[in-house]
Image 1 (cartoon, rainbow, N blue to C red):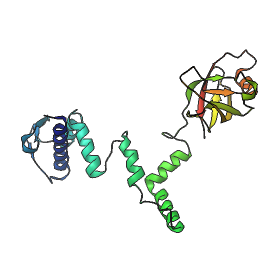
Image 2: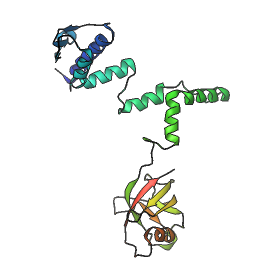
Image 3: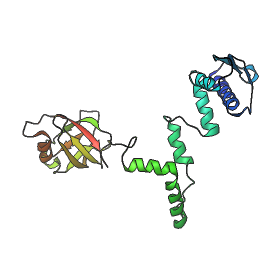
Image 4: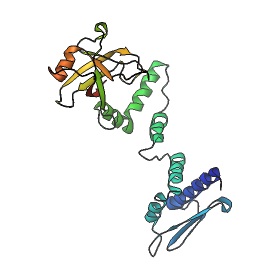
Length: 235
């Protein structure tokens, strides 16, 4: 069986199972007391789910189906496409929220744009997600990364206190950052408005700080060429 036919058959089987279980609307199935069998369209493949017990336990059938490597992705795809139900860890869920939760918000006229935007934001799911994002609760929490801090060798390139240099095309340029010394917990907040071009030609630090901020992080000890720090974007 080709890959395309296999995917089609799996989807058809999963759909048949789900439809039978939720409402007997479609039934190319043959249940017995201990076995549940689905045959694909025109006999293209079949699968048997063995279920223990004196009668058909539909919850057990669903559990068995979603533990089956062949049917599980097909069932999830069928539920997403036909019923708008998505696994919580699937990218398609984010896409569906972005494109299907709210009506389109037009640019003009202004009163309609404002009304539509407000109606979207007030939907229960949208309001809850916006609250989580505003309060920086997971999955919208601040995320830190281990990185390397350096100090520019050329005086004119050294940032003043409260500012930093970062890779021009990296993740940090233009953002406000917390830089933390993992050894003593000291931190500084800086605005990453300076930049340098990071290329494969050599190793570049993730962030460069000025002398005052480095002294606050490290104290009076000598500065190594690259220091271990934690970088947390906060804006």
